[in-house]
Image 1 (tube, protein in one colour):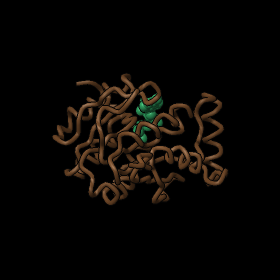
Image 2: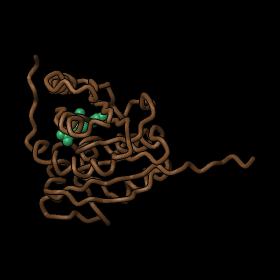
Image 3: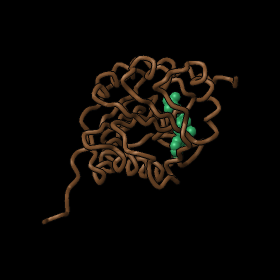
Image 4: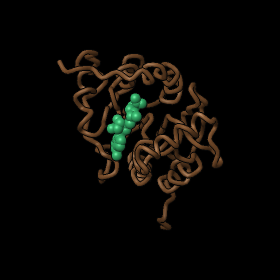
Length: 206
Ligand SMILES: C[S@@+](CC[C@H](N)C(=O)[O-])C[C@H]1O[C@@H](n2cnc3c(N)ncnc32)[C@H](O)[C@@H]1O
């Protein structure tokens, strides 16, 4: 069996996130996770929420680690990762009731974030939910000095990375019918933003 990667921050934030998605995904069945990373979230959430059919995904280099967690957990409702790079994907493989992603928007390029919102808007069913966890700026401000320092360190590492403005993400969601419904304050200066897919604007006048 391959080595199970472990992220201490993912371990710490799993239960607080679980309590939010327990409520937000209560009417969902099919869920796509974008950027499953180590696979820890998928195992924690799939184990606690049996009504969810949880599809993991990530860039191919993370599949070995995700599979190591899934092979050990053997959860019938959590599925082996599909290869998904939101920047290059033309579409998501199917429609979903919910999409979840954690700590991805500040890691991928802004171009990829734009693409992620477009793919999610297309693939979510009406009334579907997109839950995005991570640090955000609001009204152009960092919530804390530590988030500002984190943003600087990300941009020094790679100029394409950086903490995103929540209002800019709201704008990205608009064209796909995503409207932000809630914003949960989470531990360690993070938030969980929840957008709902509303009925599309019809251009059919007949
Ligand atoms: C900081 S890790 C977060 C992993 C996990 N969600 C968590 O919270 O522990 C960022 C994740 O984003 C994924 N990622 C980066 N660029 C991506 C892209 N263009 N498409 C899909 N996933 C991407 C990485 O492979 C990685 O798994």
